[in-house]
Length: 123
Image 1 (cartoon, rainbow, N blue to C red):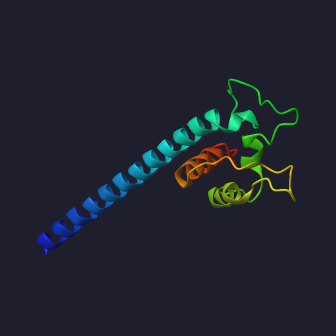
Image 2: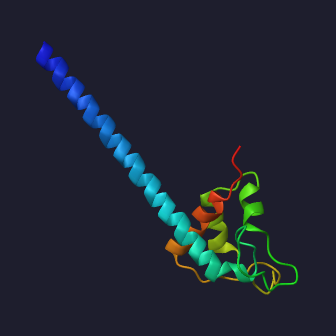
């Protein structure tokens, strides 16, 4: 009986450690996504938007697009909603004043979406 309890306890510890390691890996991967998203925003998005509190240059538009922090703070803003928006919000003849196609890959869009979500105010 004692051997069964010891084996069960060892299994529980291993499961807990594995779960903790997986959580750390997921957190590290999310951090990489956020950093990559910031790099992309600093190279592509800054032209029209304030992309962060320490942005090196001001947007060149007279009336810039929304600040990324304001976008992040909007109710209902999620990584999925941002990804969908970035895939579909492009200037057309019918909508000449919408955001132009930034021509980002799916991976780049995911990274930018994660970066914007990282700017969400903490409650």
